[in-house]
Amino acid sequence: MKAFEIIQILESFAPTAFQEDYDNSGLVIGSPDADVSGVLCTIDVTMEVLDEAISKKLNMIVSHHPVIFQGINKLNGKNTVEEIVIKAIKNDILLYAGHTNFDSVINGVNNKIAGKIGLENCKVLSPLKNKLLKLVTFVPETHAEQVRQAIFDAGAGNIGNYESCSYNIEGTGTFKGNEVTNPFVGEKGRLHFEKEIRIETVLPAIIKSRVINALLKSHPYEEVAYDLYAITNELKTAGAGLIGELPNVLETEELLKLLKEKFKAEGIRYAGNRKKPIKKIALCGGSGSFLINQAKMQNAHAFITGDIKYHQFFDADNKLIIIDIGHFESEQFTKDIFYELLTKNLPKFAVHLSEVNSNPVKYFK
Image 1 (cartoon, one colour):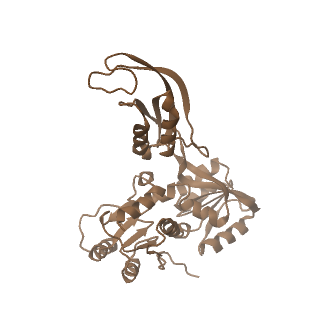
Image 2 (image 1 turned 135 degrees about the vertical axis):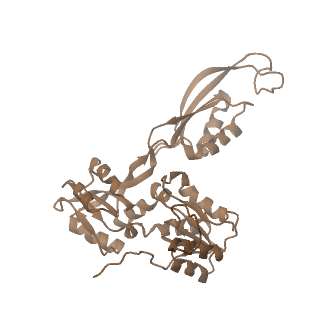
Image 3 (image 1 turned 120 degrees about the horizontal axis):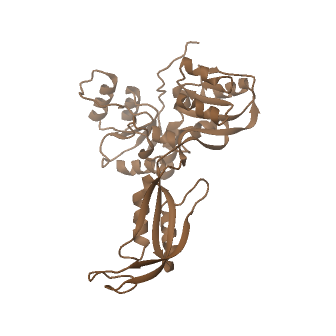
């Protein structure tokens, strides 16, 4: 098994194009052409996790947090990150990180959190913008259905819960080929009029090449006319946070007990009006304080995340409950996403869940 085959599985689920600008998701150490004996799925890459991979003879680690966030100028082991990088290289261990791209996809990190507390009717809290394209092409009537289906199969035409979405207009196209052409209809050197269908549809920018290749392969013309426009519509299937509803109304204390149980959260902090019943919940794995106002705007009764600062708790403003269950606690099930993806697609390949608890935060009880 080559590393790039494993990476393709991970990135078909959560493309690295969805990661934040500051992030370093993807293959951090190693070659995509390297042979992989097995994969260890974890949240963080620590020395203990590295030793676990070595002892289990697994030479690829897939982690949520990248071990390298910023550039390294020297590798002399002067800090923990450099020591980990040196040890990984010495032992021929590949390091791959699926971080904010796995946060962004609707079935990713936040969906895991939502599933643990039973949220229903979930949608992205703050969808991505400027990630969509509109495709316009012109096809002879006889081949319109063939071309439409090809670009739909390639991933175009999805809007929310609807697929195969397009707009079609009948018209007349004109063209005249020179002496070296071999036109599908008409004669070279003569102006030709052809009844055509103008097909319009949308697609995520990350699959542009795939859709255009499908268009070119299915279209009968030698020269295919098409336009691509950047549009500012929101990409509903990716973005920051998630919002959904509990099947039943809970009191604040009931929700806190549920979170403590499901996430083994020993240091829950919260603020806000605890007398209000809770039904609608917004959440974000990791550090999600930037979404507090978005949660309020969408009338969430509670917002669950980690890494809330003291002054940010005031933003509850008696309009919702802000709950900090901890950074690690909120993201701990991300390694399960990696494991489920890989075992589903590679049922006979060695994929292991790390047994190391990499949470650096301990609580005095």
